[in-house]
Image (cartoon, rainbow, N blue to C red; front, side, top):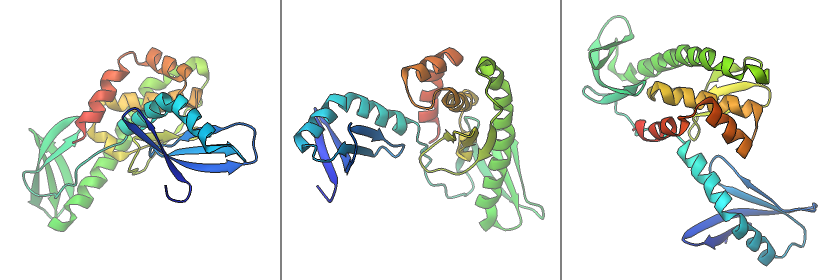
Length: 234
């Protein structure tokens, strides 16, 4: 234990949590997207009572952590050299680098060709192309699935693209959806799943039963696309 960091063992799982005491009546457990756990307890709460409550809620805590973990992108570091594979919409393409007076990217017969004046700019050129394609495709998917939410009277959310280390997407209470540009590398169904996931959050803000019921209704095969997302970006 270091400072206010504690651990509780539940079966074979170890739950590490940050403990904070406040002037309140009830104990609260929060699980964050980076899988950290924070316990906010009333002053003078015995540690034994706190740990008993954590063990009672352990299945829920572990479930939340797994949910967040499965929602985190993982892309190995690329070297941006000839012959290396790169993903686009769930398909693998071999990278080909060609010297050219004009920078650009082309897809053709299983290859993703980067034309560049300087080879040390390949990563920058390719990432710029990914972001441009991401914005176009994400907008198309949003336009496609938004009518499904008509009965909930959701205002069309602003779509933003921002690099995030641990999230595929997020949404704000004000109705802004933020998507990771890396998502453009995933299959189309997985992209649709993430956008539907975020739209469901505009109706139900937390991962409650109502949230999952809505997600199931909007996309009955969401688990399949979620699983493809978890294993496709590699």
